[in-house]
Length: 146
Picture 1 (spheres, rainbow, N blue to C red):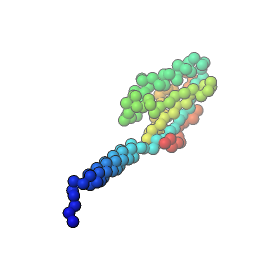
Picture 2: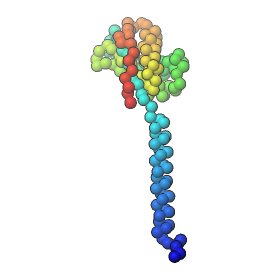
Picture 3: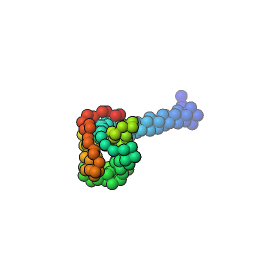
Picture 4: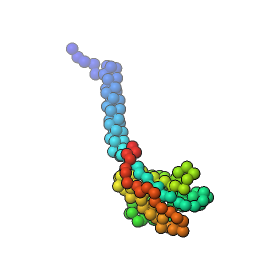
């Protein structure tokens, strides 16, 4: 018995196999790309005590986030980041209405996160030495962020 190659079911089966193969390959490629970029992130923070008034506290928080401080950090620590990318992983906030400023850093390397946080605190203490700034809590521990 002779098979008919032009039968419509043969074409549909080939088409389905091709679509199935394409979907599987795209899924595998997507998984590999996503899996390579999914790195663990670590967060750490340090706290500074600044003995000054509320308006000056707001200004100091803004100064810590300033490009000059970020550039100095990148240069001193020879970080592999641009100003923009470091700023994304860098958070400075005043703790409630107190005289405490928290500097939080998220990084893929836990030791580098600690180094960035503590160096930022040191730079701020040195640059703003007219204010009475002391480091309350030094960044030490690493909290797995993601």
